[in-house]
Length: 284
Ligand code: PHE
Ligand code: CO
Image 1: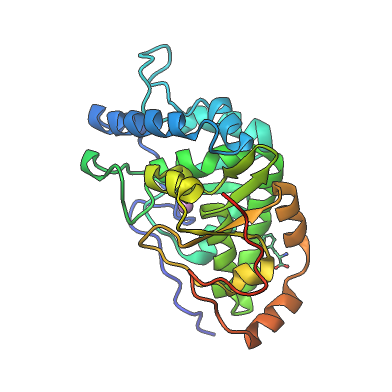
Image 2: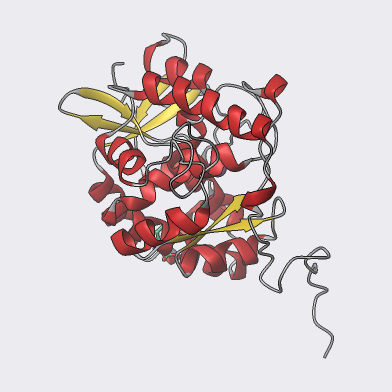
């Protein structure tokens, strides 16, 4: 029986779409882009990113040391150095991929505690915006949270859930959960709102906008509400969803989504900037 033609990895990539980081081939200019972005965001994120993120940033030393015993200047971290530390904490590793990979490939990596990261870094004239995820977004933005045991379990469960949703034709609903948590999630803490979403922490503008601007809505996280909400990929988000804690997020997603998917089939989508009567708004 003929299989549905699965896209094949590009030349040079392994069957699971991974490629070597090729760390020795990054140029001094590329290391400098990392360092510039790192310094700017690390400073801005004190008191704005959640503790799990900030601890992860330090635990993995993502300012990056250039070489064994070499220059302390920092730069794009070498995954051969990051991975043993990350693996010892939560069992995760980071693998490089040549760009966006097919959904099933992505989910399979997550389900096996491998986070696929872009290998390239943006140019110095693209510090503030870039359409495709580069290693700064992926490694600085996503990987610190993977040092947190609860978030680490959430991402792994998401990978398994992704494969299932794909089989059920429900990926469009599940993808919104990823968008509004993993990429753009906010957390309520005793000290106020904090960021955990990678799309926010890797962006200077969105770090400030998500927490401090009066324009976006900040809505208490509700699983079904989130799965009904469309999203914009090319602008600051008109709404953010606020989880009470990472543990609460993991707990609500551990339920079987089968019944939820059945309900969602009959429900309408909600526009990205809309507020519904059932929404609980959270003050900035
Ligand atoms: N519980 C989900 C399901 O039954 C899987 C999942 C877990 C999805 C965590 C996202 C996050 O399909
Ligand atoms: Co991302």
